[in-house]
Image 1 (cartoon, helix red, strand yellow):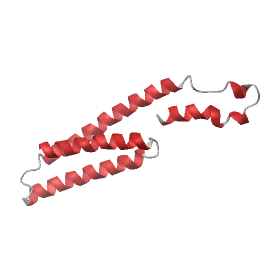
Image 2: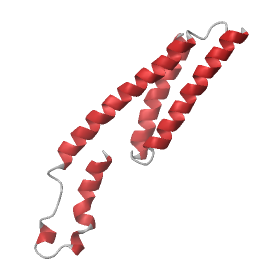
Image 3: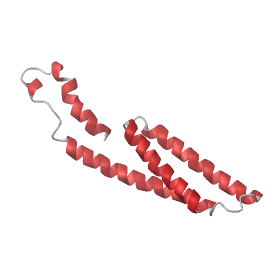
Image 4: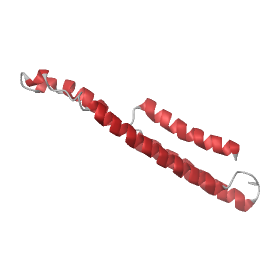
Length: 121
């Protein structure tokens, strides 16, 4: 998605540096749809992968009942901390390459999965 955006503005950004008549013909608009589809496909697979990772953390908790017991509490705490760290690392990795709106939506979807599981379990 980032590359698709950069390709859209690339021709306009450097237009003045190209010699005449190239400056009127240089655009990358024809490859933008292909790059965009590839980016969306890759991002969708990344979201699936991270959904699976999140579900594995939550599966390891084995529910959120009986957390007053020391061993249960420790197990749940460790998994929730790992889950939190995973989401923080995703934010750090994605914030430089995703537009803010998409970043917030993606993290919101993943956080929604976490909250639904916590409430249901």
